[in-house]
Picture (spheres, rainbow, N blue to C red):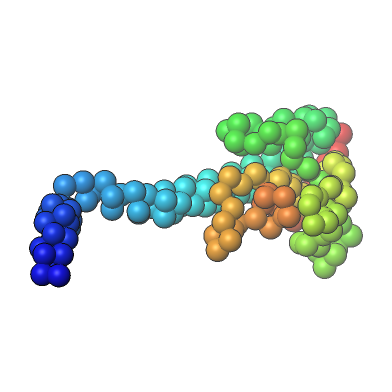
Length: 191
């Protein structure tokens, strides 16, 4: 019986020594730490990029609607005979090819009063899987002193959708970007 512990000790001694060396060895610890932290790190980096791109797209759409609305407000669009296609092309000139301009829904309409402005119209019909447009493109720039509402809607595709970081407001991993301008046309004379 006294020989068994020494025999076991001799059999397992090299493994124990290697185990102690392995526990004290710090080579490759950086690679292991990077492997552990890479997924959360890159998730945060891509989430920051996604957020920045979405806000940049929202600001770009908003600025494009503002610039195109100025043409209607001053009567230049009416005097140049703009239709929906011309208005869309003019507005898309300010989007820096960030959007597919054919997918922007544009609505230019005359309002009776400023009180009749609707900033949250029902523009989509959404179920649990996808959304379909309920609103169609329209263009009515009015005449001098008309109250006009210019609205543009775009479904921005999101690449990063995580359970606790989620920018989508549509069921199919899209964010609906909206830009609305309401103004009274200048007192120009229609030709």
